[in-house]
Image 1 (cartoon, rainbow, N blue to C red):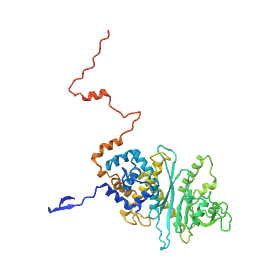
Image 2: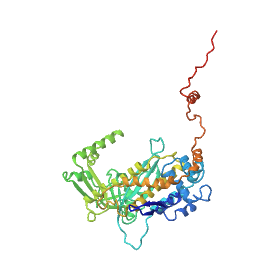
Image 3: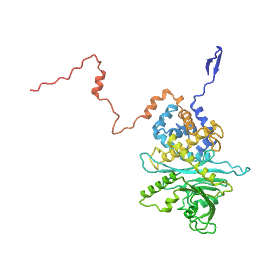
Image 4: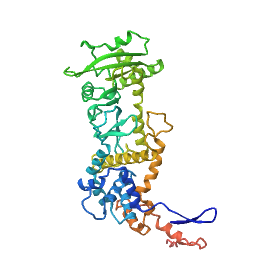
Length: 452
């Protein structure tokens, strides 16, 4: 409590915010599942109290390493200032044991509550993938797969795989009422059919070279000939049937073809030629012609969603790209801080996503339901609020307001360099001697013996 005085000279008291590190950190837990701490025991991340005495403290260690990107030695130093001395080797062992716990927390946070008494509602879900590299790497080490609600821009599903696992509709759990929105990389007939058969609808940019199209009578559809039939039409729609190569399962849908303006079509065809040159090939004329069109396949009938609306919804797919860019720019999600394949790499990836969800949930609670939703006119994006919320979370996680001054000596010992071949630079002995001599005192040159 602090004493303050009003403009009339009356004495009043003002309640200052708490600086207790445990109280501030516990405030974060309201945006995590209620069973977070009990799950630490369940998944054997926390087994007994030693220097890390509670699951709260262990979760702080996880967020220091994964959320604030402190090194192992920096985490040890922060913990030493808050509680008692702990080495970076001990931190690494504790973090490695947290992997199942952190993964389970992520799954629990993304679970959608089942409301059996309410009717099923539709939701647009946009999916995409992004690469993650390790330190000094030029290639991809991991691939991050995201599923985002296109209205609320909330993460609904995620998956981390190795570089050999590509993008696919098969990665996701689809339920009736879902409308999957995806780019050309997800245009594979078998997965498209399976998605629709799971009860979901699909809106995907069509790759006509990988998805054979048939008419209702089973005869192949020559898409180029159909588009050339009315060369001036800016928008064409075709009822088609797609299926697996074996032809065992088929699904009816519609292809909506949108003609690009002349400058955009020229750029698209130039990019097509460039890609072909890199592969040592010459693009076919049909490929160059189709490059001037945006082709979207959907299972939604035109009576439910018009062709123009389909295109507008597909253009909103850019929101998942912006979400990935935001995560990479503000959270450094793509900058893996440890060796590929190590236990800490796996923990850091999932812990970073846990921190991102924690930040997002807290911000949505702060701004209120509906803020930033794309089904209404928006006045701002999520970039700047995310950045500000990061600033608010940092002292809550680090506990910097409550660091114990008496522990600084131990902290510096924890942060000390290990013995190594090349020692830290030091001023030469001769220079040190000179610094100790007062400037007014003359320095006599060393005597030299006469050589006979």
